[in-house]
Image 1 (cartoon, each protein chain N blue to C red):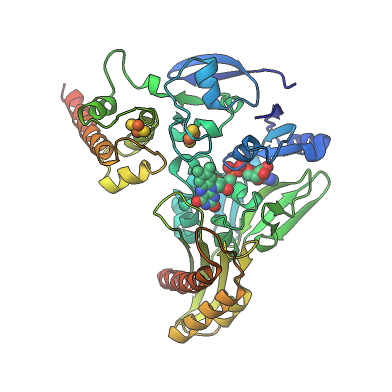
Image 2: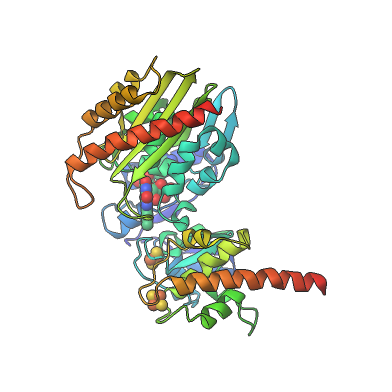
Length: 289
Length: 166
Ligand SMILES: Cc1cc2nc3c(=O)[nH]c(=O)nc-3n(C[C@H](O)[C@H](O)[C@H](O)COP(=O)(O)OP(=O)(O)OC[C@H]3O[C@@H](n4cnc5c(N)ncnc54)[C@H](O)[C@@H]3O)c2cc1C
Ligand code: FES
Ligand code: FES
């Protein structure tokens, strides 16, 4: 790896100051599971690495039944996956976190880093989209909140400007009778990049779907919010017809590439299959809440 | 040029201070600076697990962590497993079950298995396989390794009973 300087500030203010002083030559590091590989490959060559893991508000994982979840950007995937409150209120997000790489990777990788890396195939992003998550972004002089589906603009590129940090992810409290699920398809059991990933969340009113959101991964240049498929479910019962419609609309929104993991045609088909299954699981879970 | 940084960490039960450049991975620091060459370099991309060490009790790939990030951490490597000349039950069972050939992957497997057994001393075979999914072996096949870990879990459990009875 090329030479660089490293600092590990303990406050957000200090981190922002360092980031600002070094402009686009500075880069935050969280788990490093993407960044160090990119640096070793020469894809990124920052002169300054800012370790953000000691910053208090970024380490928080706080659930409140009224205001929802505040998930600090540096919380590791394993801490999300093994958290009992998270498993109960946002099971789909814990499933996504638990699918990332191996335990060695989950122990270091963060959900925030998964989003900031900007991969179209990032597993936690579709799960976050399904949960209506927003990212709280803080820059040297500004602060904004952005829906997760607007975060990634093209493969590896996000809306973050130099000097800005994702501080927290905010997820609304689950409404009564709601739940979520995440499924991905890979050619083997462990350790592979998603061919398709689908996150779904459902809120029921009796047997009727009151709200639904579907997030798609690995089937376009960015993770997607499948708005048409989601809207098609509102006011319906989750019967065969509603599932078929949602699956078709989700597939229509997918615009994947061909690669060694799967052809575009195959990915479009699997998008529909996983949409059905994720919706079915989320709905079964919502009935128990 | 980036200047060297002083890092203080607890490594295998001893507080150690070492100097490293920010660009040196924890794996490089362990092997080249501290001369703890048990942890092996395989892929440098987090895929093979040969470099696995425990950081604050969790298995991580030391190739994907900077040495400077070890500041204040509790790190355990394969060198810290045996108690003097007495092998750790996992090491003993790897020998008995012939769970290694070339041995390059072995330190990583031992550390991942240690992390598992310290959390769950009675794992199922599926749990063992899941915990070891981030470690690759090209020589042995995984069955012997899994059997050794399950057997070691048994001897750790019965060891606990004996010392309680004593
Ligand atoms: C072997 C292996 C297997 C993997 N398997 C999967 C998988 O199955 N599914 C999957 O989705 N991913 C997988 N990954 C990718 C990776 O683990 C994830 O993307 C991870 O979640 C990134 O988090 P991190 O904390 O390690 O980020 P880092 O590598 O530290 O950072 C990633 C990028 O985001 C930036 N960044 C990080 N945090 C912030 C912040 N708070 N604000 C602004 N910018 C920030 C960094 O500068 C960097 O550019 C795998 C990686 C490896 C090595
Ligand atoms: S060398 Fe670190 S995982 Fe392969
Ligand atoms: S014994 Fe050779 S790689 Fe496992």
